[in-house]
Image (tube, rainbow, N blue to C red; front, side, top):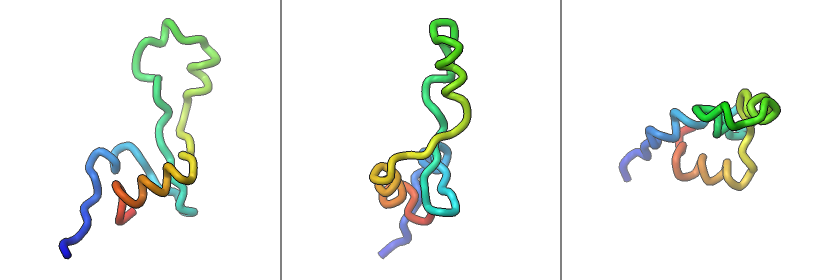
Amino acid sequence: MPKLKTKSGAKKRFKITGTGKVMYAQAGKRHGMIKRTTKQIRNLRGTAVLFKTDGDNIKKFFLPNG
């Protein structure tokens, strides 16, 4: 069996924490800020944690070595 490769797009978008959770950047903050409320923009700051089942799929299929 050949070695499993990490998906290049996934390694740019996700990060695995020390406890095994998958972190991701908040979506919807690239452009179009004028139509969003200040509260929406404030809540989109930083990173968030994926739900457990979604994170398990990311680790299994896209980040096998992560």
